[in-house]
Amino acid sequence: MWVSKVDNTGFRTALTGSMATSGLMAPADGCKYPVDANLLGLSQPIIGFDMEVVSHINYKVYDTAGQPVMLETINAPFTATISDAVVGIVRIKRANEGSIRSSISQFLDKLRALKM
Image (cartoon, rainbow, N blue to C red; front, side, top):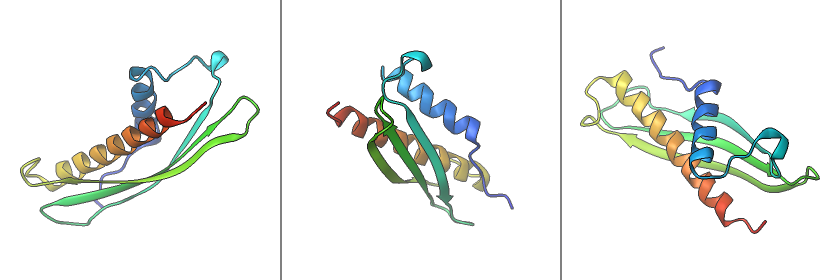
């Protein structure tokens, strides 16, 4: 019904923008480690004052031979409170965005920690 959604374009833009800002983005023709990310879903409350959203995102990173070097599903919670937004639909949207940000941040941390 009124539950906020995250579209593929928005998620892709957030991920590629974060990778570029972190210096982890390469042009398609010079990419050594392709990344595949799939937003599996969002666990969202129907109603509430504090709205916790958990994003479930599967990240895959491959080497030039197509072999996986990282396979990780990150479940990232984020809670938006009534002080973040009085209107419920805005609060759930902020919780969605916070959860996606948290997931991408965790992914980038794991990516930096890889020994490649």
